[in-house]
Image (cartoon, rainbow, N blue to C red; front, top):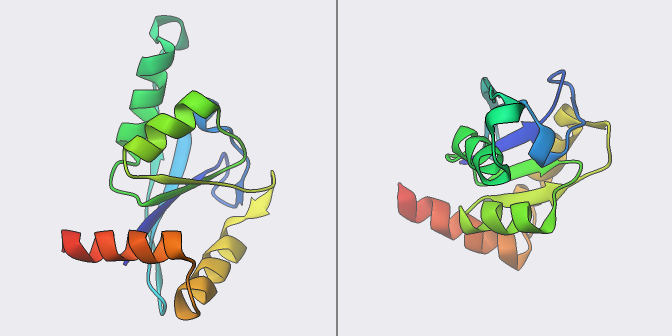
Length: 127
């Protein structure tokens, strides 16, 4: 079982840059099931946030997720996300969440790439 976050404005498509995202929809995913967990909103006052605070708030919102789908992410933010053991996945703006979930399930059911096998092994150890 993996938790996956999607940077979205509407819960339908991935359409947000990580650093500007104010909503992440989180799903639990297995080969056989998809379960919507929650919409997590990042609420901050932009004029009071430093860049580090802004990133940390977004990372905290998805800290229990193994993967985050987004349209873009800066190099420094990608490093911080990866160091938090969350794998950023860039997709085209407007990619449909339901399609991404189905494709990821197919990937799990087939022969996952090495990075995903390592991630799955790490997640299994956590349980």
